[in-house]
Length: 351
Image (cartoon, helix red, strand yellow):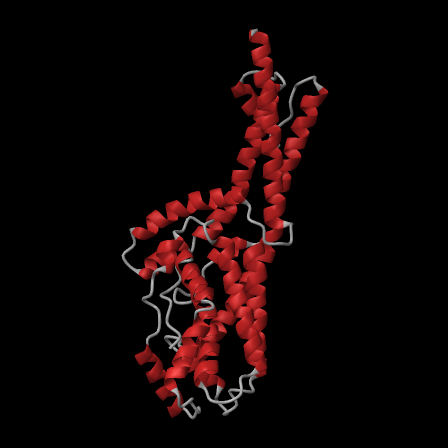
């Protein structure tokens, strides 16, 4: 009876080891090779565990600059820790397989698994199956590290392209950046309705954000080199500018600006839906924050400022305010969520 119980236990343990190894390998492939936005829950667990540590450290900081400095290390640390986490699971899976095949105690099986995974040596076993497993584990260990190393240039290229637009936007939108200042800059020669080139560049930026920040979600947490910048607030600023243009400025709505606004709403909302309930955040508390919402008085002051810079503003301010609020409602939920999730510098209102 004892023999059959032990045999059953070894079979179950061996099957569990096979499932763990296959699941881990699948997570690695879906993380870096599969060209689509698929949630890898194994990675979510690893990132959430590391994020908990960084959140605790950030809460001890007494200024935003110190919190930003702490959180700037979160994404790089999590990215480097990810293959370590994968290799730990692979080692556990192979340890279970070796024990199921009778290669000794759990300690001996763990030592054999670790030696194979890190290519420190080979097994002295005379069993062909054990030798094959040992070499396959060594191959997987190298593969997991190679995947990360190979995709680091891709990640940093996407980061560099994203931040170039963020930096250029800051130069045009003033300090602190506002939609009114950016709209005034667009109207530098009185052709705010005809500046299609700038809106087209922002459209491409939003399309890249949607693709890169869902297929490589860790990119969302790479912070800008300057503490006051953020891809989230930059995206919100562009959309606020478009909303202000459509709602308040009297005249035809540029077709390219409309397409850019649509691309921006889609990008932010799709990144938001990717992370919602998957990143350890509390959506109910995140979405209830209204402190960054514009009010009618600010909107009227902005309209007066735009008038002073030569823009023709709609006479019916009440209708313009209603349209502005309706346009902002298409993306503010996503914007607030992502701002809280990434600890972006204070989300500013569109005015």
